[in-house]
Image 1: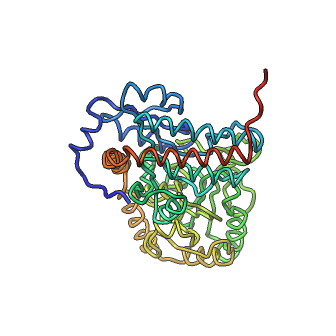
Image 2 (image 1 turned 90 degrees about the vertical axis):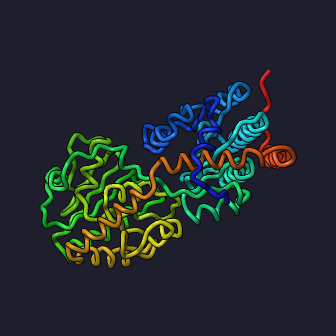
Image 3 (image 1 turned 180 degrees about the vertical axis):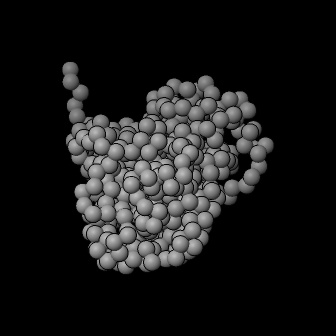
Length: 397
């Protein structure tokens, strides 16, 4: 693992001739992560969205970093298995060529695997290639480091920086009372909330069932569910059953603060997860979380201080913890909120930017000569094996 030291002079020297930091894919429309990192890099690197081809073209003219985030975007537009294999092989080859020309590759491992993993063996091959090829492999937790090592990343190239606070990306100009009025919630209500799209790696049905049982036992409890849902709705929210406020659409940035500030606890019912932006958001707004006992979450939360923990995929235990949360005295809920806010503010994007820049500086000399050649050769071997299993379609003409 790269040892990070706070040496501002070294960080600035790396970019004294004007560096270009290209990030891919461009998901700024759905997550503030890349925008906040770009702001933190400002003054030391010109951060902008870009493709591998753009990075290759620029690598001969200026110092450049290609920062890959959600790697499945490299083959999203490919159709069947053979097309996906060809896209992955071509991407690895281009990244190897970029690195051979002196470019630096940073890979942030957001997920253990794509959420919709169409071809697991191919996506695994891509991640193994990236783990060997990247100059810096950035993970958000100890579980992520173990994953990166298992994929073949050299320990000295792995950097651990927790998911930074993303709350500054959202408006925050209302009171908790105003947020509750938005949803017609009483000050005395005990409010649980979940924010984000309903996807397969989340047990939203279990949360719904657990809350339904909770509301029957403690009528003052409420649940706000906000995120994408099939259909189109003009209403601010709908109330499908007693105690539930449903915002069944993409939640605009201006509305995020209403959802989170209305809540006493944010409930994150993951079935599997490596990096949780929703947890970073909850802590950034000073809201304790209720989470399953998945390793990557236990790396981040402090049970009983900023979070309550239940057994994953166990609706009965989720109900038990929600009852525990609802029965906490107000002073205890406020204490947990203060602890959550402290945790959220501990890591900002400035820290991440500094860590990545220094890691690149520290690995610059070690990535020369035989090391770089052998890494490119290993990546080429993975690329070739993918093509042997799934040869490229013959070219027309």
